[in-house]
Length: 481
Image (cartoon, rainbow, N blue to C red):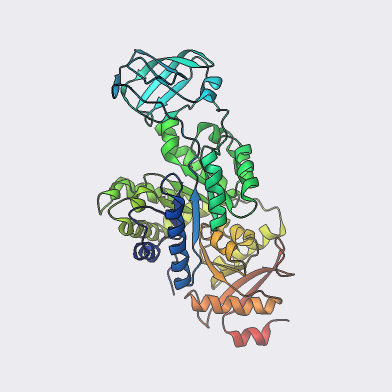
């Protein structure tokens, strides 16, 4: 029988991975989802990558998810008249709205929203937190600061403001244009940057109008504080550890990661752990042991997916990076300790008929000789609830909706299979048995669990569970109409 990897791999496309041969190789090495980073490249370049992904999908016969990652507002200082300046600990430095070029004592910060939100004692971080300054005095158009951690400041360096919720929308004008382009293109997921509050997610959802699922990136302290509310209005979550590690003490990120992953699983919503997972593979064909351990930790925690950024987009070894992630995942998932950890963190809350049915399916699969669980799903909910249970056997998600199957490519343990539109439950059982055999999860001597909702093609009606043989002759002989 086929050995089924449960955690999903997200690979970012870029200059190192834009041609058909490389993208196909990334898919064959184990990529389940391709990320288009809207911070880089033109719409024409992203369209070309998208079309190649769909060619690979058509040739493979397996759904592939595409995630468009919106840039979000970028806060940057202005320019300097005489090149970089070294800021030293204890010195004073001013940020203001004056467009004149900066010097050793001041520079423009062309974001009045920041000044409106600042108070004395707030911290400003420049260049990914390498330079830290504390506000001593501020007004609507300036902030006088004291340098608490020095370094070289230069043109257009990024600024982070960790202590306050900024009166800034998560969607810039560029983001709105990119969102509309991505939705028209047909992407399955939109990743939303700079989320601070649930209203940011609601705004993106209204603009997407159901054309793509919304994935909120948790990269700001405000988002961590408001996480419960953000999770409720999101379809999925990305733990964006890079920015979190800038705006929060770096040692606080691992427990936050663990907490967010558990909350997402309890809500049956997919969660990606991202940023610097195999960073050294941008230049090296081998990862460090610490990086391998980092990937393994995310998998042990129960993350739905792990992500490659520059490793696959701009690195020298994009295919090797995906293959490394695949090998780490398979090694972790074959470890008995993995099952112990996953099962000990299973939520016991059951509130609906669908919850009870998927829990029963998992119990049956674990206590009897069942080869896989086949979940017929219109909206994706049945398959997501099944994945929340983290069963030991593969989950075959079956739907006539291609968009549903593509979105489910991000969900733990799901193997997505397109089916014709069905009218009767017996047809569903026959299709499930055939899919289980065709994809190597079972043979004619095995049994499977089949879940569906009757009447068919109505979202949210999961109400039937059947233990069925994989031999179609037995199905026709024993199943009711």
